[in-house]
Image (cartoon, rainbow, N blue to C red):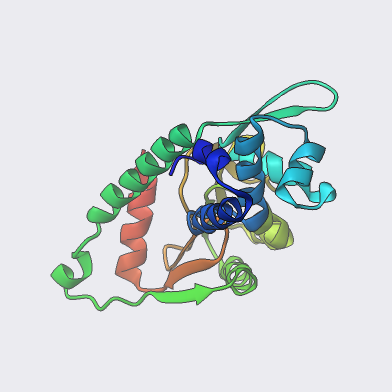
Length: 241
């Protein structure tokens, strides 16, 4: 069902359809508030932060931050004014972008398929679930860095805020720190910065010995200290477009 068809439903059917859409949006990586705000904008066609908060049933104090996050995801656009008015990128355009991102990620994964079994190296990848545990693991990795540290990905604000002191301490220890981040993302001083868009995951690599690959919302990640797998992963990152 197209989102526009929601207007032909009665109230009970509309609520059921909305909940299903919100569930699907959360499954592709949006937070609950982001899902509600985007659906609210689609149904309204446009709105201010306060109007979006009302229709999406989210706190007004959170609406601006949520809409800014959707802007970074290229799911909404804004037009200046007082107050700012936000417009949704059409669901069709968002769908095409998500499919393109998924296709690109799967194509890259194909390069790694079977690598470990062909080389006779056991796969040693550990899954970590939960933002707090993942941020703690990233912090431990940064603290252990001796020569090099790479942090890459979209939505790095929480990673860098949680680890900013650790990153600065790594720089003071003589660690070569490189951060690949989206435009306008604040990064610690005295690090190498590369600006890049359209990244699909958060990556952390330490001393070519440890690697972590996390979802953008930090809900789940894979961690490995297998030397061959880390080296291959690092090579892949350095040469990916």
